[in-house]
Amino acid sequence: MGGAVRSVGRALHFPVTGTARGIRRVTHAHGAGESGLGKLIELHAVNGAGDVMVTVALASTVFFSVPTDEARGRVALYLAITMAPFTVLAPVIGPLLDRLPHGRRAAMAAAMLARALLSLIISGAVASGSLELYPAALGVLVASKAYGVVRSAVVPRLLPPRFSLVKANSRVTLAGLLATGAAAPVAAGLHALGDPWPLYGAFVIFVAGTFLSFSLPPKVDSAKGEDVALLAADEQHLHGPHRGQAKRPGLRTVGPAVTHALGANAALRCLSGFLIFFLAFLLREHPLTGESAAVSLGIVGVAAGAGNALGTAVGAWLRSRAPEVIIVTVVAVVLGTAVVAALFFGAFLVACLAAVAGFAQALAKLALDALIQRDVPELVRTSAFARSETLLQMAWVFGGAVGIVMPLNGTVGLLVGAAFVAVGWLSTLRGLLASARHGGRASTRVA
Image (cartoon, rainbow, N blue to C red; front, side, top):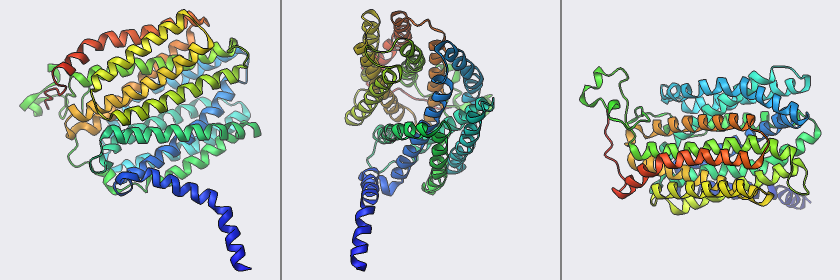
């Protein structure tokens, strides 16, 4: 009888334990388990799941719960109260965390715990309609950004032997995307129970992430051999042997190829923010043919997520081959797709643009990672990753703000989005191709 009970118990637990073991085998493969990268992959998956819970809750409160005209005002207010201060704070987060290299695990745990507590505050604000929603949402954004900056700084410390940064970052990013896709329907189901329920789910997830942060290896907190990077390539920022006389000692140049690639990535991130907000209102007012507003947004969101996942997978497969050419090519493809989608506006082309933009954003970001690994001295590579993430986040905020104020005309809106990409592509095309022709590696100098 006892043996039969144990057999039944094992059968009932197998779907959970078997899935957990399978996930652990994947995240810890190829030395990622021994180096600690597997733990970071799992932590980033937890982060993605928690963020999507908060996103679903806020979207249902700020966006779907009121008529379209009122929703535009509420979302604009949301951006003004949360994103505007966040844009000011974002550049400060990276340099501030640069000064705390020995507390990275604690910083990641604090970012998780802060979002857990703020999720409970937002749940109360959602139920009562209180204005606490906005400062709490700002706190979630700041904590999420702080986690992202520290995560970018941690990856180089956890590379397994013969593992490139591109491959490591692609694994981490893909884990976050898969977790987001898996958690989104769960969040929607919790929302069906009531507006606060996705936030309760976020609280549980972020508490788990708090404990998981401390499971990272102690070497994450080591700053041995690190210094501060400056995202500039011009000669006036190079202080040479007179480092002690410089106003900002310890600065490094990351080289022209990296700054050009960063500009192209900023253009793609700007387009991403623009499309999210512009298409959200456009498809709510003018859904895809035969579909509701929610389903239309879901189709575009799934297309963008699938494109992002595919771009991450292709980036891992390409590794670090010709990153300049990859960036120039994918930005050109996005530009062409945006122009075609604007001129022949339709449901299929909108979904195609979302997928292509997601694909290009993921692949271009991995190419930027490859350039940082190739051209930036290891001494300052960690800081370069952190600061580049801050700039890209600011570009996303700017694009989203433009998307809010655009008239709901598909052709005009997508042409504006194409203009963002065109500016970024034309401003970086010559520099990136010149870098590729000269063999890639810039003669990086340090201060």
